[in-house]
Length: 207
View 1 (cartoon, rainbow, N blue to C red):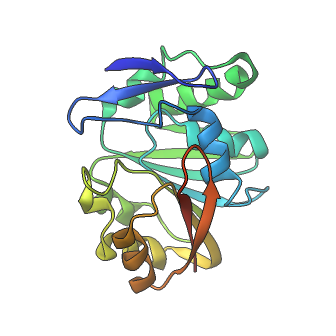
View 2: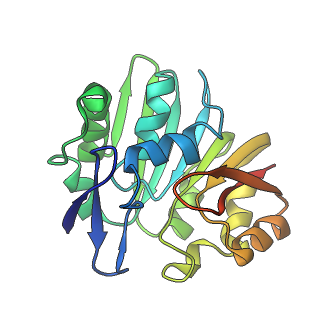
């Protein structure tokens, strides 16, 4: 996987199978995790988070930078991207928290001082059935709807919706018409998310 340095000096990778970068390479990859995921979901102590497409763990990193009293379940189908966390360099201010991500990615779990992380490896459409319920926030971060349509369907959103608490927030970078329609059809109240790095807003879905 080719490494690309983004605007905030954090690294993203290029996936050959999907022919896409894991993050926007023209803006800051870690900064994007804060602006499009952790902040819209209003992360605070005691929350349970579903991180769909865990990848390099930047979205979870953004969450634990706001609170170390969380339960996070990550879904990821590619062990190679999890292995890359062992060698990825992150900006100095994130290094301490990223060691948690490295440990979680290596053993597929982390449980210390009130922070619990569990990573389920495999097809997200199947692994979500092992994720449990009671989620307060969802980070929905697959490759684009054109490249990975199976994780943007109403059927998959139904699975997410039923596992969320009432009032829970889903955040995603995509504002594609089909994504918003499928979210609405699954029962979400759909709203504009933050604008960051492009003219179009991200998307928020509230149960």
